[in-house]
Length: 208
Ligand SMILES: [Cu+2]
Ligand SMILES: [Zn+2]
Image (spheres, rainbow, N blue to C red):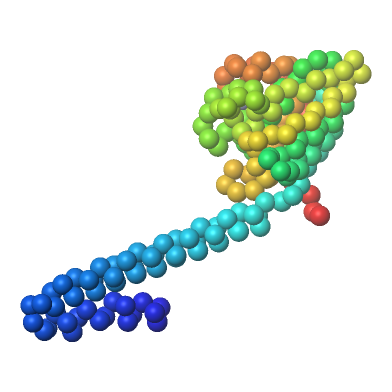
């Protein structure tokens, strides 16, 4: 603050002198204005830098969800989310599925207490987009498409996703992961018509 005070005060005494000093006063005022604008920009830049640092500090490198079967089902497994260059690597391994496609999403609420998994709420959608496939430009953040189970009911899913985030306002940490009984058609609103929820898990940070 010491450096700002002298830059603002000098023009004042010059105004008391003859008419010729009007220009001097104006120049001094302009200089002071520039200085204040510059100082304000520096403060704004410093704040932005601090916010970015806070976001980085808050974003974990890895998160995981242990999926457990909802009532009447035997699906279980694990989903791991790892921060990588360009996005988040999603790797899921599930067993106990019926062969074929199964809708696979991050849901809004990390609550699997309801026997049918409905306590996890709807698809996580912080940007207010329509439901879509994982590669659509506009989609729910939680739209991860389908798991594909083989004849033995096992599914392995791997995807580098550029939408979901492990930190910041739109973090998926603390939210739910749901696997559905049927296929996500990637277009029906608001859930892709994927049917009942057969497994549910809560996304938690993995300690290093
Ligand atoms: Cu879902
Ligand atoms: Zn969706």
